Image (cartoon, rainbow, N blue to C red):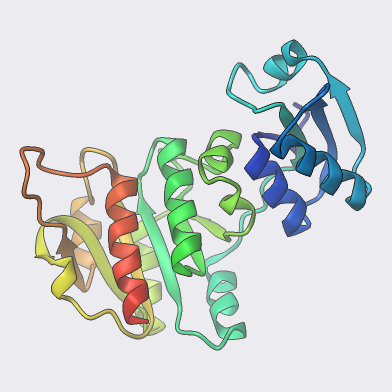
Length: 243
């Protein structure tokens, strides 16, 4: 993969990239592809995207052995936004900002799953750490089922400082962590951000202290917590219900 170019794979991610108007250099598609793969072929032809047919082994090489469903696309590298640009998206829609802040999510599949839930809940954008955290890679795009191509994401050096900046602009910040108030008992109105901590360790101490309110999901079984992306989805849809 050349500098400035990214490979994405899977039928839904590539279809979403086509629908979003992403800059696609070309698409490699498996010979004699059937089913939903034909939709990718037709959409690419309609958009005038160059198509290359190949056997499965060639696609396996391009996707690095990851399940590609017979479709690989070469697009411009993911373009990150700024926090101000995410706030501007909400302003253009005449909506109160709705943001997800990720405090150290490391698994790109979790990042992608959160982006997919965030898109469905009407979130305007995500904020992630530049260092020691998952970035918007092909694996994240695949896990997002293509939502990543629609979801603005900003990279920041420090999450605590970003929370301070959001609060200064009237955004109420909710941290998702253990020992918080039952998420279902909270009313989420106005400008809001949900902060999700790292897998296993949760929110860092300083980030937790910066949040306006800590919310948690009551657990009634033998497992003490949920996967970060599953927990984020539950709370995001509760927040969306109040908006």
